[in-house]
Structure formats: structure tokens, C-alpha cells
Image (cartoon, rainbow, N blue to C red; front, side, top):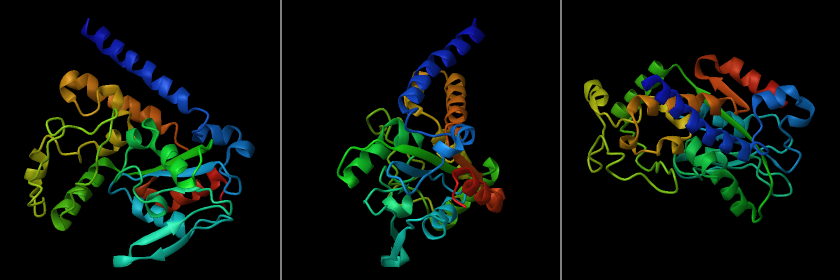
Length: 278
């Protein structure tokens, strides 16, 4: 009985997930769409409706890839970048008609919140909404989702080092889901915000059950609305974790491209070949 209930729960959740996919099916082009019909489905910067969207997961070499996108990508209408205060780079990645072709940290800023995840970027409709505002009109777009992944243990250790040595907390990340922010009870902090978390020991880092470093890649690629967002008390923990994992795998298949931190050169080559940017 328990196995049936578990399977049924997954099935019911994916009825919703399939509905979400169908809603975005005409605007999101996956790797499969591109390879099956490259002439029509490759990224076209010359047109007006194609937009590269980068989902930046912490400590996966995302910053390096985003710099490559705005400074070295071989496209007709390249990004125009300037350096502001503290050498922070800001870029305009627009076509001559004013339409934006790159949605990323250096081109649009953290428009959907700091290190926005799949739920914030896509499920909430934030990408299209923000682009409509910036372009001054509601347009139909084709979104090409991209991200970078990394060995999960290496990524976790790298995040711990970043937090411990540099005091990073990403406290400005909002984790918007289901039309609202999580309550303090749903997502407690692991540290005193007035003190920060710099110098935290590995044991302390591991001991906090609310540490978002755990399974960060899976969570950021999943549709958290399937599991009541950050309200973990409303569902069996095993079922919840399984739905999050299956959702992340399902969503990753909708991406136009994902690279691996451990294979940067090959990933860059595959990215350019897949999207026709060579």
C-alpha cells in the first residue's frame, strides 16, 4: 500500500509538471528540439524573439561562463560592456531593434532575484515579465535555457569554503515560490544575520538542517511548487525529496544546454555547436 501511495503521489505531481511544460512548450526550446530540427530551432540572435537564459547555480563555474557569454561569444550583435564601481561589469546585450537576446547576471542583472532558480525564473513567468517591462511591450519569445553543473560533493565543499573564508551567505536571495516568499518558519537561517557565517566550521556547516547548500543543484532545477514550496511539513520527506529529484531531471531535459564545470573546454565547444554560434 505504501509503495502504491508513493507512486501515486509522484504521478499526481507530474500531472501538474506536465501542464507546466505544456504551458511553456511553445516558448522553451530544448536540446532535443534543436538537434531534431536545427535549421528552425537553433538560436538566432539576428531575429527578434530568441533569448538565452542562464540559470546560475552557485559554485559551478557559472561566473566564468557568464563572462564568456558577454565578452567572447561569436554573435552578430555582441554585448557592449562597461565597468562600474568596484570593477563590476554591466552589459547591454540587445539587437539593433532594442530587443534583449541574453538574460543573465551581467546583461540584465539579478532581475528575478539573486541566483534565481527554475521556480523563480520559469514557473513564475519572471523572465518573460521582466523582458516585457524592459522592452516596453509584450512579445512572444523563444527561450533557450542554459546552466552549468558540477560534481555535487566538490560543489558543496567549494560552497563551504566560499562561506567560511569569504563570508558569503546570499542573504538577498528571496526564494520566491507559489506567489510569495517563504516564512521564517519554513526557511530558518543557519546564522545570525547581524554576525554572518564567516569562519564557520565544517561541522557547524553540516549540522544546520536548513542549509541550502545541501542538494542545491537539484533544488534549483526543480519546480518547487510541486512540493508546497518551502513548506516541508505538508508532505512526507521521502516523497518530497523524490518529487524534487524527478522534477529536476524532467526540467533539465527542457534545457537547450547544460555544461559541466569539470569539462569547461568541451562544454563551451558543445554549447557553440548546439546553438549554432560557431
